[in-house]
Structures are given as C-alpha cells and as structure tokens.
Image 1 (cartoon, rainbow, N blue to C red):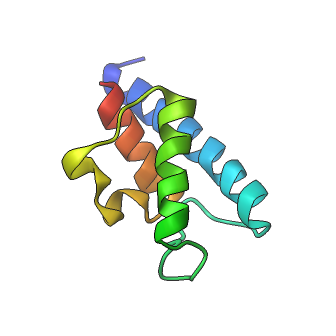
Image 2 (spheres, rainbow, N blue to C red):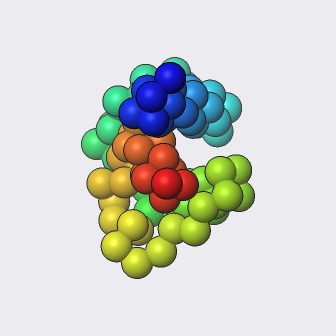
Image 3 (cartoon, rainbow, N blue to C red):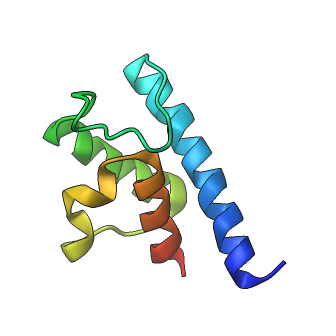
Length: 87
C-alpha cells in the first residue's frame, strides 16, 4: 500500500470513529460530511469538547491556525486535520 493509500485508509478510519463518537454524543445519525455547525448540532462549546477529544483520542496537539472552525465542521474535516497533524 502506498503512503497516499495508507493516509486515505487512516483518514477513513478516523472519520468513521468520529462519526460514531458524534452519534453517541449527539444522539442523532451524523454522516461524515454533515456540517455540524450549519445543522445546529454543534456550537462553540461543543467545538472545544471536540478539540479535547481529538487531542486525547488521536494523540495530536491542536493549536494556532489549526483551531479554525472549518477544521471542525464535519467528521471528515476533523479526520483530515488529525491525519495532517500526525504526518
């Protein structure tokens, strides 16, 4: 498997994990590309909870420019952030 294929597989696995986490926390089905803020499922307080969850679960540090809202809009965008921070 190439590095690109491995990164894609990792990102898909992370996205699936985050989708399960969001379902457990929000008690609604969440698709990987659902915009959590546009749908009203998330607010700024929940965004901070997401930061802590990502840091603790995936062993990354999220700071500075990475704290922008677009990185937390969906499970897929968070998975992309985690994948990028891990590399």
